[in-house]
Image 1 (cartoon, one colour):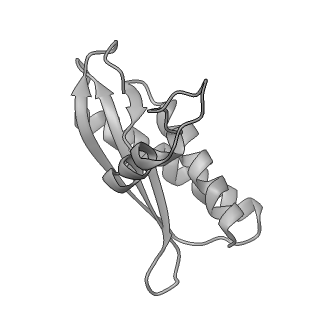
Image 2 (cartoon, rainbow, N blue to C red):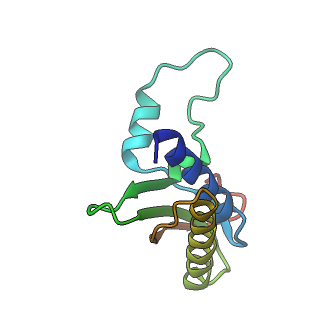
Length: 125
């Protein structure tokens, strides 16, 4: 799959993860946050804005036998973290498998969900 395909997988995973009740945002990895902070900003842009896809990582399995998707979530307080993480896992995995099957390249997909923090709904993700 090409880089464009990987970008599509990131978008699909982000969309499905953010649709899960209790997920208030996706947390970018440290490397992405540092790169965004170091990048020059243009006038009129928000310097700390990152795309939702920054909280998703999609890699080919080391042996080339499928995909590994990592989702880093910020959850709303008052929700059971385990139930929410399982819901994210199931929705993302189902959506990515369906997408790959629609392209005619059904492959195994593993999904890891990491809860990076639990925050008040009004706390910026």
